[in-house]
Length: 161
Figure 1: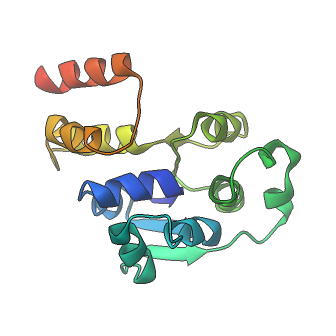
Figure 2: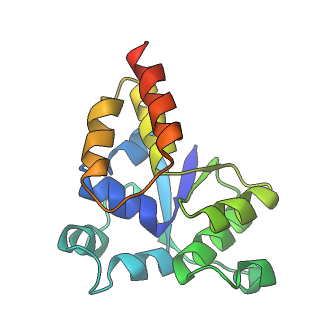
């Protein structure tokens, strides 16, 4: 198994100290060149830039090879999202990890299996790798935003286990 990951999930997983969940769940992770560029932006948090400067062994920088990046359906998305979806369309990963709803919708319409930061944390919690409640507490301390009803439902599910 392997995954393609977009900027937002990497950013938040780094910030909450759970980026190493990615290889635990997916094995190898492809980081599209456009995503890495966003992670290296001067606007990115220092911890995120430091991680992106020296990718771990399980994270492979890749670029798209075809014209998927120029797909008109992707024009409204930012560079990282376009790059992540283009790489996923070419390489057909087990999962595309992307948070932004427009990108998720387009990816799903193109037949890509999609999850995001919360889905990754949920999966890791179900595997017993982390405390989902604690991870959500850390995530809440960042600028990440999510549907309250989704998180309440997931917290209740994890608490009942």
